[in-house]
Image (cartoon, rainbow, N blue to C red):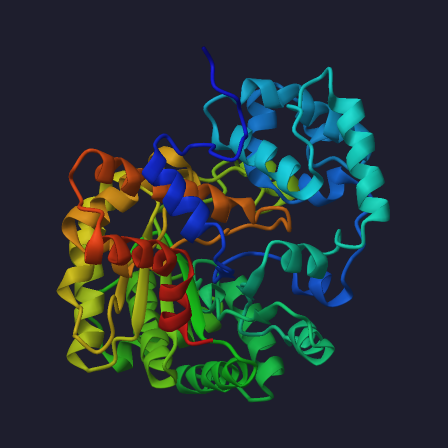
Length: 472
């Protein structure tokens, strides 16, 4: 007989898993230390007009599924289709997402935010759409601030470019919003030298933001430091770097200065020059973070904007990225070792997108733990295409057998949607079921001291480890 779908013990397959989740994981606040939410939406506390706006806008996970289901782009990112038409096409697609995490996320979000337990499909679409819109209209919690408070989000960290004024972060702080919102330093554009014109434009924007003249490499670094100091004054405690691979080429200072002059002057760089410049910038960023006591995050392994036709039409971050294949282990080790040899290796979180690197990173982090803080170098949560039940289990299994799962800083949403917080619940259920199954199989003791240690471990991974690690 089929078990019920989204119910209180969803994913929890044994009594110990249920106890770990309901008595320990479920109650913990959320620290969402990496996301792509709009600070402006939070500051203005945007009032959403429909479930389509709050649910489908900017969600490239759903967009990929819609395209795979044969839905025309006009109903996905098009401006000439209504909110209802977009929602209707998503409802048509949902029954085709069985075994995709979108199916679970969709119904967890409907239940937790709206109290709707019916499954979404073409037969229920209009009823659910109208019911959600009525709730959004009349329930004051359906604003960015209201939803973060509803989901017990203690801290959220956005993703921000060094040239950002952070004016919206300042407004949120002044408003006394219950959920703490902090910026995250994302300096990727400062090392994108593939297109000289774009790089020069960015340098000029950096000059304006910092109020500093930039005509050479040293002035470029000084301006970045100026912005780094500003971000720190605004409460920033993390950097984040989206890279295809790790860069650790050998170079001299004079080479990097010459490369800067060349690209700033509008000349194309060779592949070797690009790699050397990126290698130099990664070290600069690492040293800056170490000096400020920040945590540096590296998301690597994606090939972005593969569909050039759609990139030209609707731009980046629209669902045309994929897992890449890069041999990065040696360069990752070399990069971390360089900083470590200088005593300038900050707390570091490494996220891989290709699952074949799970064991690589699980062993890599052990090379640079130095005893100054538990879990100083972290194997980050299953990311993007791996952010699903199988991916989470594989990430935690690799960390468990090759490191210390108990020191893991846990989950994040990596989302652009204010309805994505059930992803933390999803992770917590998977974590508790993983541990509960081991206990019920007799692989972990669960009485006396060990029971207390296990209960504490669950609470730590869900919240306490991140709280202590980031020191927001």
